[in-house]
Length: 265
Image (cartoon, rainbow, N blue to C red; front, side, top):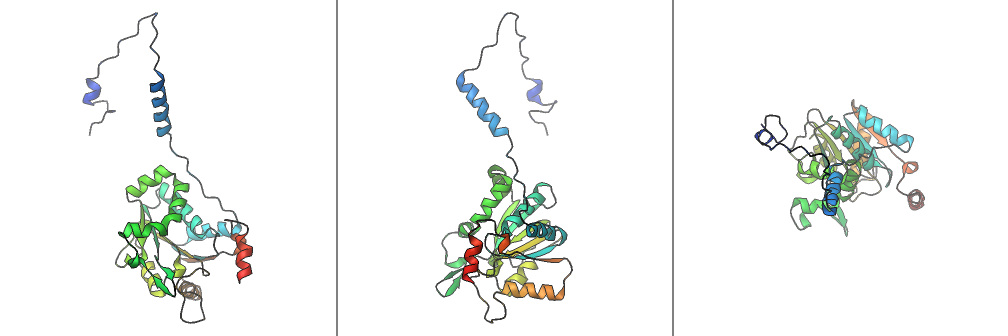
C-alpha cells in the first residue's frame, strides 16, 4: 500500500520541485503564529517517558521475583504496601516489551452497604460506567507507568481491559497478563472461577488485604475466603503457584498508615 512517504507514491512523484533560492536573497522568516504551531507539533511528537518500577523494600523485590517465576501468584498485604502498584508495574513492562499481548484487570465490584454486601446490580449506568469508580486507582497507576496518552491508546486498542468478576464466567484469557485486585472480597467459588479463566501463554496475579474485606467468611478459622484459598495452595505446595505476604514494614504510601493499623489490631 502506497503512503505519502513511499518512494513510489503518486503524491511524491507529482510533487512540484522546489525552486532553487537565488543568491543574495534571504528566506522570509516565519511569523510568530507559525513558530508557535511548529513548537506545539514538535512537543506532540515527543514520546512520553515511561516510569519504571523500582522496588522499595526487600519484600517488594521478592514479590516481583514471585510474579516472574510463577504462572499464578497470590499476594496479601496491608493497605499501602504496593500490592496493586507492583503487579501493575510488572504488567506494564511485560506489555511494552511484547511478552504478553494485553493486560486484563478484574476485581469484585462489591461493597458493604449497611449489613449487606451489594454488587454492580444496584448501581446505575452501563457496565463501563458501573466499573469506573472501582478501577479509578488502577487507572492512575497505569497512567503513571505508561503515560496518559499511551494508556489511552492501549485502552482504545483493547490492549488494556477491565472486567467485572461477576461477568467472567465462560471467558478464557490467552496471551494475557491478568491482574485480580481486591480479592479479599471474593468468595471461594468466585476465586475458583476466576483462576480457571487463565488460558495459554498467560500469567495471573491476585492480591488482597485481609483487613478490608466487604465479605466475611461464616466460620472463624479464616478471616476471608481469599485467606482460605491461599492456605490450601500452601498446604498442597502447588507447582507454579507463588504466595507473597507483605506486612506493615512494606507500607510506602504514608509512614502513618502502619502505626494506625497496628493501633486498631
